[in-house]
View 1 (cartoon, rainbow, N blue to C red):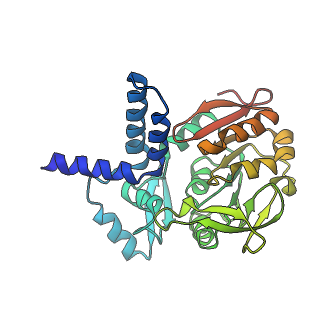
View 2 (cartoon, rainbow, N blue to C red):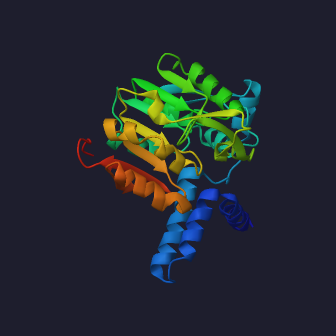
Length: 294
């Protein structure tokens, strides 16, 4: 009976997980055979490893958050981390932080820290959400400065609080704006309170969010950029040509399948190539000249 319950939970988790949905859809385009089987089961294991499976009761963690005004603390690499998680009851990412007392996507972050990011780097976190990656870059990677971009007002307020409670006020510069191909306004096209980081934007003159081009910021140095903008990646890249061409930062980017050809074409045009393909539509792009060795 217990095994049946675990299997049921596994099926339920995979069914609702948007990342595994992409893996499943890609697999359906592959011919039947061992490669397709390995691909799908590799996706299953990635969901289990990176995104968690509810196979145990984490009521203790929930009570801790409730008792501390939505604040949750854990230790990572000997450093005390504090996260404000007001959506711990509904938002998937916040639930995962509480459930495992660790940064979201810690395995991927650790890979980037070991092979790409160095202490003292200048980092852009574009699509910063509640600040999970921003805090990791500041506290664990020891970045010298971080520019975090998050256009959604309520999400931005959580980001700002997480930056503050981890003592990153002087190191992190926060921008409540979206980045696109031209300056203007944006409105929310899609929002799901169970995954607030999956919010999608669209350009709209009636929107209440600002859109700016990355090139307008005229940064003097950028070593690494993380991009997770939920289908807005092509628009962002169109407004970043001068910056990427001039500064040559390494780029870790989520590219939705329908946008891959155009995003990859733009990055190739700017002198970038895929250095490594991660799971779940994430790619590490680097330039052939002037990039650090792995």
